[in-house]
Length: 76
Image (tube, rainbow, N blue to C red; front, top):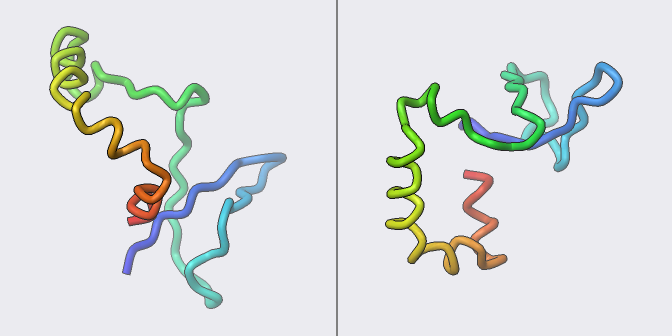
């Protein structure tokens, strides 16, 4: 099973924000995210206008996504 765990790279080390999903040795992939947490739309082939349209259409779901109980889905 693949499990994603968020962490912080600090002083040359990766610090996980939750316990590792396994106690044995495991292969990992570390992806460095932009500091601001933004998404590079152009690299995904999405223009500003298209992003605004998507944002508008998905706005109806925002209240549901922002509920604390929905955080459980972030780990999937």
